[in-house]
Image (cartoon, rainbow, N blue to C red; front, side):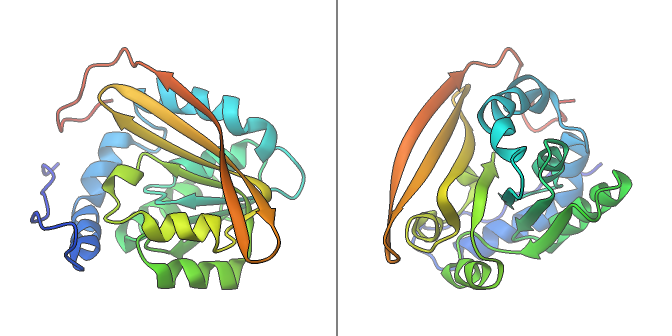
Length: 220
């Protein structure tokens, strides 16, 4: 297994930053998949999945729930949402290589009908606008361990607040691991009229993992 490579560093204002970031993920897709595995690593099993279950299980099990998985990677969260009862999951990623891995894992798990796939760069206003126009609104939008790797989060914030990606009363969950703290932001969207939406933070949960950092090695 080849060690991961890193894209060239550049200024945050560089318009090519997003393309460089996505290229790095595509280059390292196989390594990342082997590290995380189809069933998730220790961080997933001990931290992320238990917290997601507490926050989203009751929502995902509701009839006709539509879920959007942003930056799906190898599809781990998309498959988890199907297991929670959601029959309509759209898994998106800006890397074609990642999407191919996710499709393969879904096929192996017998979830071909439960998960759909679409290439979406969450740093692209055009991609997010097309997503809303062609797919409509979602009851759940999940972004697991990816926000810190997105070149620009402004387009996503706009898509959630004003772009109509979230249905009225829908929830957006973003997991970020930073300085050994897992922070989950659960946001409820209350829409006022057609043109404006207001984001309200519903809760923040913090957990300190009892797992040593992998330092680029497989975490198991």
